[in-house]
Image (cartoon, chains in turn brown, green):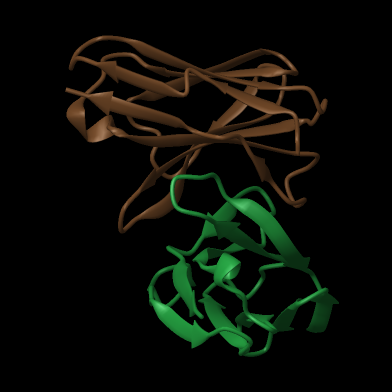
Length: 112
Length: 111
């Protein structure tokens, strides 16, 4: 299995609080991605990174920010969580933009 | 029109049969195509990728690509109950910067 660790695995928090999810990889891959998965919508890209300090928006980026200060870590932050952000969040990595992506185990986030 | 379309299913097949999963895509410039399997409550797992027209076989799995028809399929031979999962089709478009997923087809293999 690809060396990808997501933390935390589960989190319950309240509306309006900040939340940070972490993705850590040991594969030294250049690309890292954050997705959310919701019933009826499938996997949707939030943000991605193509190198240290290089990030770009995905399909559903509103309300989310990211940072990548080291190759191995990609952080996703919900500045002020809303109930619509309740979802399962997956991190993925790939060697380049057109190569297969490999996924972490996911974080189940509930915002009450 | 969705960028990547799949029938949501469920597709039910008996054990030992061939399961055929289909996917169409809208970006004619798409270059790379992937199939992921996702068990309930788990993360997507890459099972096949294909870049060129034709067939690509790996064990019981065969991916088929027809760029002219903008169609990619996954065949699972000798289906087993352990193959019961949701199968996600994913495509990298012309710009080669993002993977676009279909919403998946749920496969049920019954004994």
